[in-house]
Length: 256
Image (cartoon, rainbow, N blue to C red; front, side):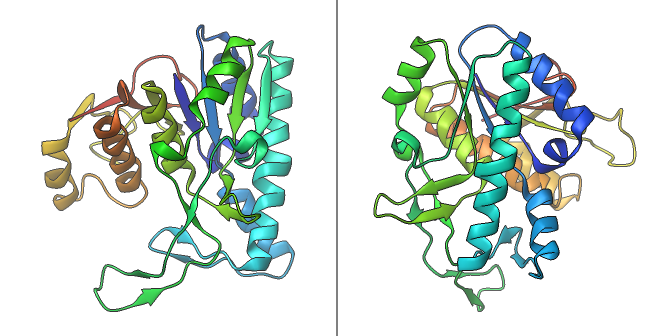
């Protein structure tokens, strides 16, 4: 199984420690992908940089790339790996360049949703299931190791690229034919964001557009579900959105 935790969980030390204990207790081969955007934005501001996000994606110039690499591939990755080791999970932290576990292609300038504005996101990479070094991940699993992947990958030509952690998780799950579990701070996708108990147990692709149009699904939940659907179309076994406090059960299942 492939699990993904976002920056809000990584930033909450108590939630992160509990997740690592629960994740360590889950049986079978598994991979963990983590974000860290909340911490990265805080570090940028501490260093005098103002984070720039356009349509939910971080614009990554050369100085921003240094910061996000320090945060994602440095503190976040090693901290999560250390917590898993303490919980009895034989984890190994990796960025994409380590063993060339994930390569990426630099994103070309894109036209925004307004159909007019063109943005160069800088050192941002796009990944696909073909980007994933499946044989390496399977070899690590055969050694009893649990890969912990951050969102810093490389292009094979000496350049690091900042990638979206949800897209990395989607691509890894599809490449492995594994189930994908996206974990965050709620019990699943909520029908009413003011009611934490209004979890939608099942969302099909046909329902997704209607729910977006109705405002039930909005903001950061849209790319999460889009990545789940992309994973399913590319070969993932199943997809779930769950609370990081209960990664092994419940939540919302996403289906085609």
